[in-house]
Image 1 (cartoon, rainbow, N blue to C red):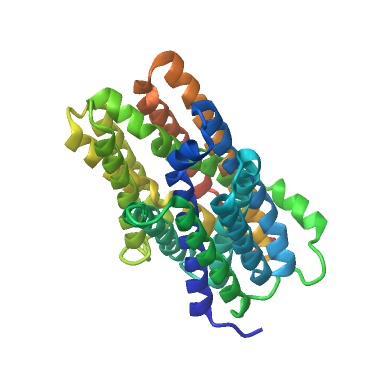
Image 2 (cartoon, one colour):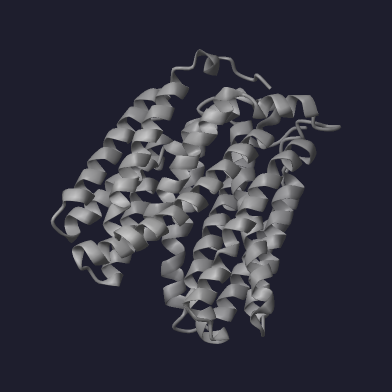
Length: 389
């Protein structure tokens, strides 16, 4: 099947942007849902804890479906799930079904995230890490831009209307995907079970999955706990803490742009070495910095340092497992999401019992583990053997 690589790539970018917009939009309406349905802190937390489980389901299922049936239907159905979730929230009159709608958004979002990454890896014959970095920029654009758009729109529209518009955008994207020619399925009849089982026993894939377990959890604890850390450690206002957190996303976005352009020809080991140095500098700034400016600078550098982890490791996965890339991506992204959920839960226990100041201690420990895993992975001579499965 002949397909336009540029059109497929930009379709993937649209899907990733949609994923970013979806997750940020959902988090931005938490206070509105609390008011509408008279939810307390526990009820709100329980409600939004459903989102990761939906993402876990989407991340787990997308890979085998992509390998067997291709990307067209997968992307369209994922967009449909987002549409159903947002429209459900927009028109819900009771909180009994909100849990289902949030699960649908998580499932659709997790599937979109995985499918767009796997698809870009499939169509990129060279420089997979750089192309995946550029793809990741579009999540950052959604994450940075959507709160601003929502803040402006809330002056004129109720949150239900905003949810409905976001839902309409997702279904328009879903229809658009139906008219794009995507790469054909890699397994036209069925996925060879034997190859799949060999893939899951492959040491390199397991090491990459473990690295992404800690990479995802590192990003997660920074996203979820930084505002609390800054308020308690630096006595900043909540608005300033949120601004500082946005510098973390900005740093990640800028570095992914650089990896996809200026540093495109740099080998992975040099980019990882630079990334780990940046993370170390950032954590030292956050640990020893005396004020808000130091915190902002530290978070900006930290975002830059963490930017390369996912695209570069997923690039290695795409190189090595091209015939079952969807299934391989599904495995490592599921493990990554489990890391995000479990370490975030552990961080909550640590913050409650020992104080939020230990956020940086946990981050230092994660950095040590990530460096160790990266060294082992990058020194493996087997990585030179592409298309193993």
